[in-house]
Length: 126
Image 1 (spheres, rainbow, N blue to C red):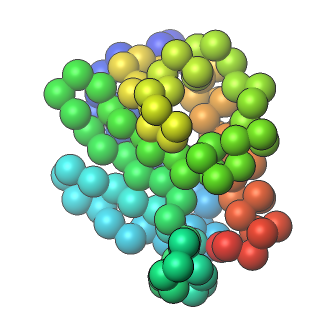
Image 2 (image 1 turned 90 degrees about the vertical axis):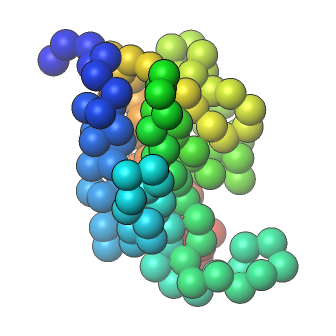
């Protein structure tokens, strides 16, 4: 598989990775500007009870695709070993700006999503 540079293809790939985690995750929003995945059971998020703990979002922008991945914020130690390629995309604590996706990066993102689901299941968040 070649490196993906088309932003629409990157966006679609990220969405498919999140959709593949059903039934553990529900798709809360699926619009041209925002795609959001959350847990499927009521949980406390901060001081507020929510119908599904926030997990991740995909937001297309003109120059990249933003991938907001909450498990890296809530469980930073579990993701301390991410590759340099993945870390270079990280802006802030949980937002990745993805301009191109190599096969290795795609595999790593899929593994991170899987690990995030497992961590949230263990903590009874999803």
